[in-house]
Image (cartoon, rainbow, N blue to C red):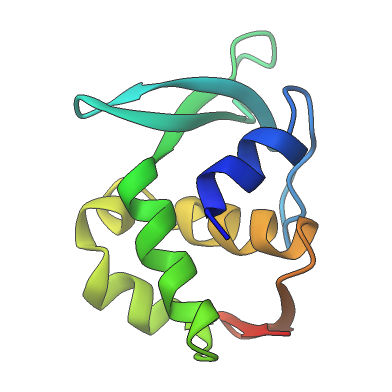
Length: 120
């Protein structure tokens, strides 16, 4: 499976990303660019100005890297994410739960708490 094709086919703009403890909806905006690479862009709540959400993105190569982990039957953990995807992690911990949430939406993992998504 090409995970990016699967995401493009099934995760449409305005999809709410499953999040374990979010204060507000994290919503898919669509595909754009981040760091010169195609990326899935999502909006996060701006609690100071609710009409102007913040935007973040996860690149195609980051999706492939995270998917390789779960497709090998290994859990997607915050510790692994921080060590192996430092650029993505630097941009915010919400990128971890966004990747996990999209994988959960696609039926690929289950959230088990404490920064742990287990592959199905």
